[in-house]
Structure formats: C-alpha cells, structure tokens
Length: 224
Image (cartoon, rainbow, N blue to C red; front, side):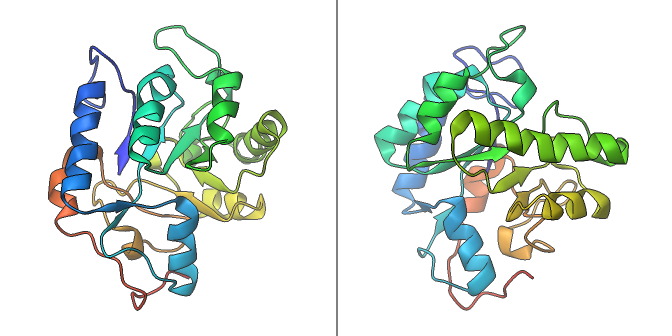
C-alpha cells in the first residue's frame, strides 16, 4: 500500500489525517492482516519463503514531517513494519510542507521496524531525464543516504512510480536489490509484478478492497 503525507488538516487527496491512518491500522488488525517488512517480501518473491496468511506491506513516500510526527509513532504502537522512501534534496526542507530532518530520519532508520528506500535526489520523472541525470539521481541518492544514516540502503522507489527499461538497468547496476513502482493505470499485487525492479503497489484509498484479497503462500509464482 502506498501512503503519502499524514497531516492534521489534509491539503490534497493523497493526504491522510492521523485519525484516518489509525483507522487503517485498526482495519488491518481487525481483518487479521499482518504487515511485513520489505526484506520479507523480497525473500518471498526470490525464493518462495513463507509469508503470513494475509500479508501487507506499508510504504510511505517523500519523507514528510508528518511521517515522523504521526505515522512513525503509530507504527511503533501497533508494531507494524513499514518502508519510508526518501528523496535526499528535501530532507530538512520545510518550505510548503515539512520534511524529515536527518536526525529524525536516522532515528527511524535505527528502528528495526523501518526500512529506508532511496526515492532519488530531487524526485524527477526518471523516464524523462538524461542518462547522466538518471545516474546522479539513482546512484548519488544511495551514497548520500548510506553516508548520513551509516547503513546500507538496498531498495529504490521510483519517483511518481514511473520507470522504463533504462531506469531499471541503472537501478540494478547501482546495486539495489529491488525497486518499488506504482502500477498505474493498473495497480497490481506484488507477486504480479514483472520482476524485482518493478514491484507494484496499490494506493491507500483501496485498502478496504485490497485486504479482502490479501494472501500469503510459499508456492506462489516467483518473480525473476
């Protein structure tokens, strides 16, 4: 599932209030759905290793201040793992919307519940930039995050969910293990993805619909 900013007062359709996010977590809990880590999902897709009967992966894009203020405390309260996708040029920038500081990000990265994914440096559409710029966005963002957080960053999240073969090749060559996309116009389950460098998601507004179909099974068809 893909989430964006968490705010007391929503500004756009992609936002949620903390109260709405809690309702999502309560729905997950009452439906006996089990949030899993990105490491668990990738291991399953690569090897068929078992997942819980009804697994779900929670992802939060863009490194907003509301992620630390509201989402992270709720994740800790419920014991739910999640992925936070960070574009490095916005860390500590609070023009318009607030964003995570490096200290807040490091606190989250040091929590075993949290996986940090690179979301590029400046959040461009990777399919529309030059080879040189693409390299900078993919490779340098990884170096910056690893240097600041003092830990490996193994995953990439495509800005706007958009990718092409060229972007996938650069991400793979940069030694990421997998990449998260967004399957517009057709949102898909993770195991229906083309490969590990185009893992599909659903937008958070579809949670109630999607959890009815969630399943985990070690015999699922594997991604390449």
